[in-house]
Length: 184
Ligand SMILES: CC(C)(COP(=O)(O)OP(=O)(O)OC[C@H]1O[C@@H](n2cnc3c(N)ncnc32)[C@H](O)[C@@H]1OP(=O)(O)O)[C@@H](O)C(=O)NCCC(=O)NCCS
Image (cartoon, rainbow, N blue to C red; front, top):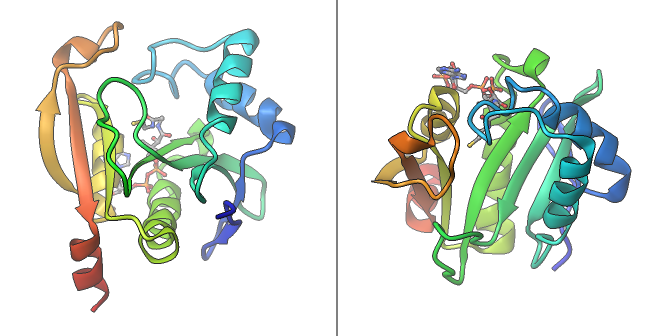
């Protein structure tokens, strides 16, 4: 299926396209945004590589979405199939993620977009399980996971190599069954 454009009360979530590259450069060039995602700002060349990788994740209705409110760019969200060494390739599962411009933090946007991706993932794509992973020390990301109803599953050693990664990573999840019960 095709990746759809999604709407929430304040956000329009648009499937990532090549026209969004400059927004990704803006986001990833802020070292504070990247604190738990490599620990330093990314160069334009690095973002171009990341952009190509992100575009390559679009499959079966999943991928990356760029979020806008009535003022402009807010950040991006992802709902993608298992990816990388810490995510076993299991059919019917996807990872939830988000990265917002610093001046958009603290307004409920990460959780608003994430709730819509949970709805889309379970009700439209038909996923069985949605999980999210972050470094142990990323309190903000963990708080978003808990806030949208994901539960802690496990702690595991990180395959990353930058300050903070030595403390490990955590995984949270929501199953289709939990989602169904919450909607009932
Ligand atoms: C983490 C991040 C996505 C949070 O975005 P946000 O829009 O500020 O989050 P929300 O406003 O939706 O907050 C949701 C909940 O998390 C809490 N929260 C948000 N940031 C927090 C922080 N730094 N510390 C503790 N709690 C935090 C909020 O208080 C809220 O709690 P509530 O539902 O109980 O009221 C944002 O700070 C960000 O983009 N950080 C950099 C990129 C990043 O680390 N992404 C995650 C990588 S795994």
